Image (cartoon, rainbow, N blue to C red; front, side, top):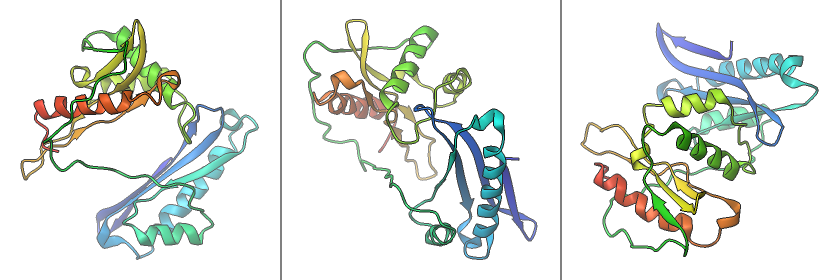
Length: 235
């Protein structure tokens, strides 16, 4: 019921989802994603998916087991390239509350050598060490806890994390202060593209609050660029 498909002439041209999310700060929101093929944009598909999302959001917000007396915010994520979708949602009363960006380093040359803050060290993570994987997961949840829209960590989400095909502890760069995790980047490789390129994703960049503003993320990122390069990334 969260999902809907739109077909045109027997072909699926769009997919929409509106699903409940428990946030780390105790609030709740319904997250809406509308994926529409470029050739189908501006033909009324946006309105169909938005109508489904709003109806589903009202159903979810009316469920006492989910809402527990709390209001829920309906949030839509829109690509900056989809002007039609943004226009339709704005016309339905949505307000732009934030922007995101995907940054790419077009090559992996001239990576600087940057020292870790004094007293910290990077240690390898055993791909079979589930206890350490859980510590890494919990550290990320703590570091992101104050970020807008951050979802509440759950056992189900941890299972998704460790069973994701992109899960690659051997590529992670995790900094320790004694036995404490100070910061981490959970790197992984993207798929090999038809043109022979492959993205090395330096995702999940987190530093614990007490270790911020010391250059740790910068140093971990430089190391991450080298590790994904060695693993076969081209950008």
